[in-house]
Amino acid sequence: MMKHNRLIKMIEDKLSEGLVLNTVEIKEHININTRNGIDSNALGNILAKNKQFKKMGKERIKGVGSGSYLVTLWRLK
Image (tube, rainbow, N blue to C red; front, side, top):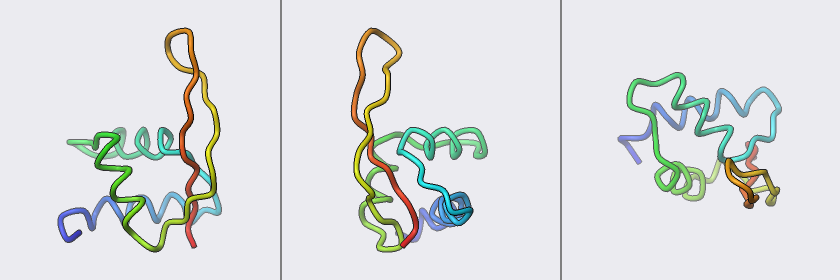
């Protein structure tokens, strides 16, 4: 995970405010504040494989079109 240290630190800083954020909110924060951004698959892998992040469950959010989908909620351990 050496190449993702900067992204991990950015996620930790955002979640250290005591927030519980979903994957879409974390992705949006990273993509706004970095030059290259990150895709959903890479972000999911980083969050799932690092022990400092804890999965809190799922929530249903409304999609852009006519549906909705489940996203995972995350917080710091």
